[in-house]
Structures are given as C-alpha cells and as structure tokens.
Image (cartoon, rainbow, N blue to C red; front, side, top):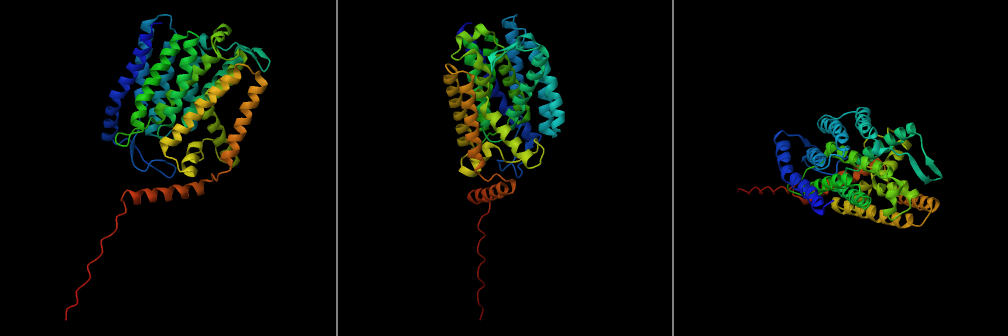
Amino acid sequence: MPPYYLLIFFIGAYVLTYLTIPKIIGLVEYKNLMDNPNVRSSHVKKTPTLGGVSFFYTLIFALFFLKILDGSFTEAIYFIPGLTILFIVGLKDDLVVLSPLTKLVAQLAAVSFILSHQSFQIGSLNGFLGIYDIPIFLYYVAGAFIMLTIINAYNLIDGIDGLASIVGIVILVIYTTIFYLTAEYFYVLIALALNGSLIAFLSYNLSSRRKIFMGDTGSLIVGFMISALTLKFLALSPNSYNELPFLLENAPLIAIGILIVPLFDTARVFTIRVANKKSPFSPDRNHTHHILIDSFNLSHQQASFVIGGFNLLFVVLMVILGSTSDNFYLVLFLITTIIILAYIFYRFDYSFSNIKRRILFKRKVDRLKNGVFKKKPNKPKSENVD
C-alpha cells in the first residue's frame, strides 16, 4: 500500500475532527446540553459534551472511502451497524442517563455484527496454556465477552481530561504497528483514522478555553473500535506472526498488556464495589486516575500522561518478554505486576466519604484562588457627631 494512503487517512480524519468540533461546542452551548459537575466530577463548571459525535462521522467517512479504495475490504460494512447502535445509545445516555442493562443489551447487539464476520473468528489459541483449536460456539461466547469487557473498561476510564484520549492513542499506535507489520492494511487505515480524530479531540479536551468531553458517545465508539481491533489481532493467521517480535502463543498475553490500563482499573473498581456490597456499575471516585489526582495532587494532564506512559512502557516490556519467554514466565510477570499495582493503590484511603471531603475541600481552595469568594469591603466607620 502506498505510504500516502496512510497520510491521507490520518490527516483527513484529524482535519475533519479539528474543524468540526468547534461547531459541536457551539451547538451544545446554544442548546445548553452541558455536563454539570457533581460530587464525583473532576471539573468545577459546566462543560460541553458530545465530542464523540465527531468520532462517529469521521469513522463513517473513513469506512466509506476504504470500501471505495478496495472492494475486498468487506469488513467495512460490518462496522457501520455496530457504530450506529452505539452512537445512538451513547448520545441518549449523554442526554438522558440510561440503565446499565440497556447499554449492555445495545453493546451486545453492536458486537454481534463484528462476531458474524469470518475474519474475526478465533479458531485456535496456538498453544497458549496448551490450548489449540477451540469450537465455534466457544468463540462466540469468548468473543462477545472480550468485546463487551473492553468497551465497558474503556468507558470507565473516561473520568479526567485527556486520559481516555491518551490511552486510546497509545493503544491505536500499537495496533497500527502490528497490523502494518502483518500487512492487514484495512485495520491500519481505520486505526489511523480513529487516531487522527482522537489527537484532534485531545487538543480541545485539554484546552482551558474551548474544552469539550467525548461523553459516552465517544467512549463507547472508541471502545468498540479497540475491541474489534483486539479481536482481529487474536484472529490473525499463524503465518502473520512471523513478522511480529513475539511468540505466537503469547498473543493473548500481549493483548492484555496492550489493554492493561482499562482492564486493571475496571477490575480494581469492580472488586472494591462488590466488597462494599454495591453494584459493580455504581458510580464512585475509586478509579486509578482519581487516586493519582486526590492522593498525589497531580493535575488532570499529569495523571493522564503518567498513566499513558505506563501503558506504553508496560507493552514494551511485555513484547520483550514475549519474544523469548514461554507462557509461564509471561503470566508470572503479568500477575506480579497486577498484584504490586493493586497493593500500591490499596494503601491509600479510597473510601467514598473521605474522598468526597477531599474533593469539596480542594474545590473550595480553587474557588478561593480564582477569586470566587472575594473579600468583603470594610464598612466605613460612623463618624462621631458632637
């Protein structure tokens, strides 16, 4: 594939997103569809949301041109129904909060289109933990579980400025590299298009003047695309792995390494909620990014780049180990890392009441710094009249 195709898809997606997000911000402000802060929020003023709308139409354009570019890219048409379902559900959830069950049913409907295409079918684990061929019904169950887990895990990390975008960019860069090395150019181009859109969105998400959130509309769409790319990565033919710098049987562990941030954070908060006898989907401020901000006094940008940097470093280590180690040592490394991370964050007081007090105090300090509470002028002393 000519290199200029890669540039066209990346730059085209970037420009389309960058030029149209201000229009979305203007419409959201005009219709007052703002995200209002609450006790769990990391922002202190009304902020425009629905930034994920730009991801939807950018991907639809990309899929259209991919189909025009090469008629053999039959996967393109299978993405559109799933994207449309999640776009509608995410949009409604941003405007009128939906129940977790409603969103789960919609996600299951969306992923069914991807699972029905044969190129995503995982027929073998290629010796991972001694497992080779797997039956087709097990693929459907495992495939649905993998995609639903990734979609919801990515949705849950969208809690502070820049985090979901930065983690998404890191993941997409890795998958772009993998699919380029294996000559899966359809997935290279679709990953580049989404990455261009995320990078353009990030500049607004981190802005202090023209800020916008991606909302559930965006996080569900990006999570869906990442889950589809993950499934395709696991479904690559054995010959494709000859071009990759790790052993064939280590692919499932490499996939976990690529998605370590959303998967670890989701497992952690779900465990805490269940231990506290709450629903796994009940909202709180127990996420890893909240702990970094509340306990280490990091800014949103600092916490986001720290987590994104960790994600990239962890993948590099997993690839290095996966090139020589067998499953046992790679699994041992992965489990050890997760235990260490879990212990480190367990040491902090993440009770909701304590974190709530910290947040309220921090906001009060911020208001004082911003001059919200101005010093009242002294009343003039009454003059004595003799």
